[in-house]
Length: 372
Image 1 (tube, one colour):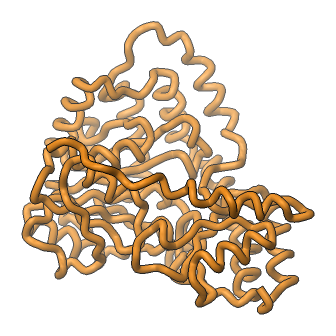
Image 2 (cartoon, one colour; image 1 turned 120 degrees about the vertical axis):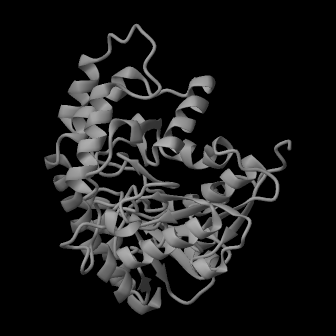
């Protein structure tokens, strides 16, 4: 089936609101996009610089050192100790993997891709690329017999919802009943804020408590963009069922989808150092500690947001009205309607702004209070 029409890129609708926010006397506070603003750690930049003599083609499957670093990271940080290098694969960021996974798995007309109700739009776009249908559902009992791929996202984008072991286990069980692959987008897993995730690791879908020690038809997707400030590096990976990983490797070899060698070296170093991740986590925790109470003082309710990089907020108004009211205070947020039809009154606010900009936004919100 040929690729059909795709929706317009939604963020183009934000241009006039950005102009309104920039007119604020103290300037814009852009909380609409989760793009890191903090420096890439020096040890990672040094690793990149030292690997720039990259005259040969890189390995699609990744260097042995990188694959071993991914395996070790899963064991150390995610509680998944039964992976081997055959179970992991680096990717050019996570978005291209999300967008093309249905196609690479061979989905097509008549197949269904399930994704969360509050969802990163690329899950549905990936279904469209493959000629499949997308279904928004958080309830495994609703998933139809035609389901061939299920996307899980924990902590969620945009809503910061964290799924526990029991919820993930039920989702895996249902996917297996349907003969579907289940893939979990876990790129915010180091960012748990509320109990119990402020003191316990957020569970991976590859956790043995979830899978029963069987990774069949189960995949986890991860990105270093947020925890290591590597969005510009496009550094990500996938892990899980070795037979699925092998299929993805074959497709990617034919397509020439390979992570540049210097970036593979940088990723290897990043995955081996937990110190810079802890430092970045503290930055986001500090910013969240300023922004969340300020929003609440201005009459917003924060839903979910137990983890991740965003606050999922509503003041009980139409999303576009709220976007405009915030823009008039120089604050640019993301419309909830970009993340599904079920959230016409929510906005998403990112923690990826400098301390100075977050402080400014908080002051503006506190000053206007309920009058916002």
